[in-house]
Image (tube, rainbow, N blue to C red; front, side, top):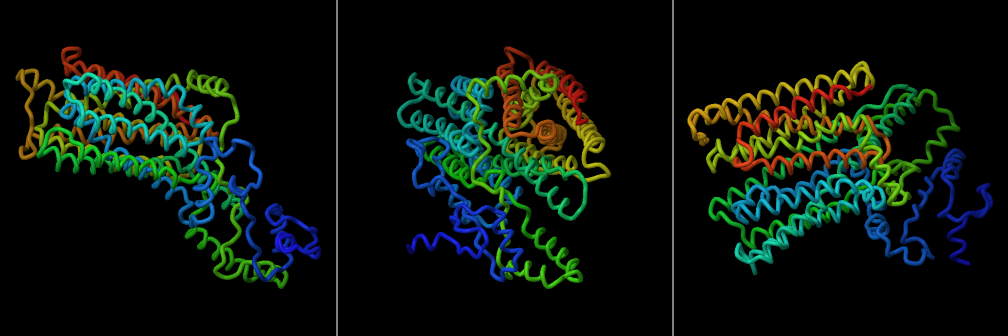
Length: 561
């Protein structure tokens, strides 16, 4: 009887005997409107662990693997942690840990593994990356972003583990150890496709949720306007934090490789710890449905509303508003849930939906631009950087490149989301044209500076390796700076464009999956063309410039309407 009494209400509530965990949201609204002086407890969100009789085998499913972590986040995460900016920053920290390790491994792969093994492992990475992008949207839609990202990050750990085995028990002369490293690269490519597709969907959904929250506040105030864009700002924030990983990785590599030009078990153990940290951070991410407005802005907004209502206060609505005790949190969003928006379609239906988006006219016209975002960097950082800079200057140039990536991401994201006379329609179209035009100017400047250096190298028959202490380093450094800014600019623009074209989470996964597939294909072909025995340096720059011009021209036909 004690247990029964604790979970029921008296009949004077007007709703009879109701299980406290199953009270409808309208019940709480009703009780507050009756002038209750004490705030009623919030409705309990039932999770998988709260159910007394779960279905057989349910706890072993992938969707309930992290149910306990979800329940903890639901109960204990503070309001400030549930904002779109903080969650985007957390997502950036995940990539910061992972790529602080992987960027260094990839850049120094030739000196660590030898040129032959490095080429084989990188080829395996981008081959499996490209192929897995075709099926990764279905995986994300059915498993969810956080679970997919957790296993995707662990894919990066496979290369580190196989490299540790290579250092301890193998070497360049041990065939099985070399094949193991290539296999680790293949597993990494599968994980990378899953990780990046989930990241793209999560960013776009965070932005969509933030826009919905802002629109609901505007409607509550009686203001009818289109929601403020958030995709550009959030993607810019993520990209800036992500690019910081290259700065940290560059510092680690400078301190270590300056003394010892090859890898070691100690260094790769440190890299493994970074990747594991990134995998753990994926479980601190919240699903978009749990996001709330910024509590500081909400407090200011509520105070303004309270001042406006003071003169119209009556005894009845004064009693009603007293239901919220001072300092007590207001009722949370009734739609808040710890569950992600997962697809219940079959794997075949998911694959069919993915292919339907892949082969739309819109995606076909944007494919060459997507391809260019991966095709350009093998020439820029490998062919050009390794020939026109001394070894110690390369580290400084990479810092310049990634600093410009950070600046470009923030500037472009803020511009694309700025509020003007029209938050959508003509305003969005105008900002897209300006962004693409600026991209053309900045990227062309970098390519022209690179062409001048290539022409001089051809005349002298030997490229001049510029040192950081020489004034002649300014021109190739400017090329690196332009390329870094332009790359961040077009990456943020592509995500902003996909966020405007598609609204559902499933379509976000599919659009990002095709984007990463085309990008990875471009990167793999770019690395294949790097050896000058296949394609000369000037021809590599020419091919990159042709793809850039045609891809950008086609993208002008797919502007926001």
